Length: 160
Image (cartoon, rainbow, N blue to C red; front, side, top):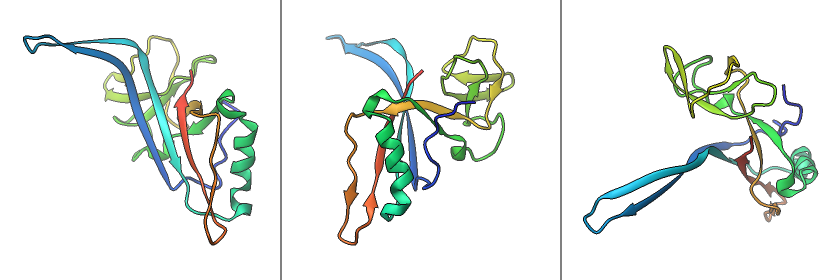
């Protein structure tokens, strides 16, 4: 179980996960489109928080400062995005191998299939499922409105 988790209080108001695949495409003069994949699949995550007071934002701000920009690696639980618990199509999952931290999505239930494909010997885990990630930028902006409330938005990229 990972130790360095993003604080869950305050909780994000909105979470968006995007799957990325590196694909190159070209179109010939005849109209034929050629595509190829290079590299692997990875996820990006955006977290948006409701406006909050400084005392509410304190744990999150301190955590972000400790990450030293893109250098820090931490974990964010993603099981709150599942409609149903367990090995259900569309849920996120990890495998219990010690040095393997890739996030997967379950795409079939019989037999359990995940995307991207997994070729290891680990056992699937959906509770908790988490993304190993870092910040996408070395700078983090914290906005303060007229009422003294803080607005925080985070952009994260999967690290495995």
